[in-house]
Length: 88
Image 1: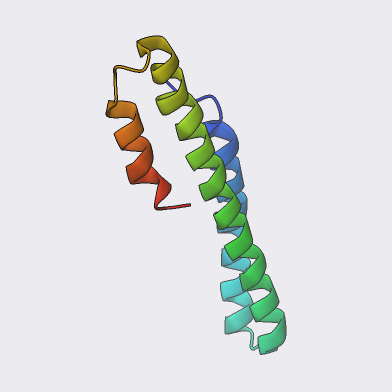
Image 2 (image 1 turned 120 degrees about the vertical axis):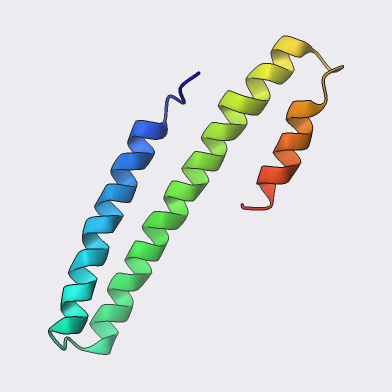
């Protein structure tokens, strides 16, 4: 089953990728370190937000939905949740 939010996550990551390429150009052009650090912080934040969106989508699509369908007797999705939660 495809994840409904993945296209939006891909869009976020492509935007961050373009921003990162601009930062590389800034470094190559000798721009001030403070400006570069600020821009790196923005890219880091964008990637962090994409990661959180991916994890929340995973929880919704791959854990909550199967748990509701299977009832409390199926513990495999819960085990999967515990494994992915370490990346939060």
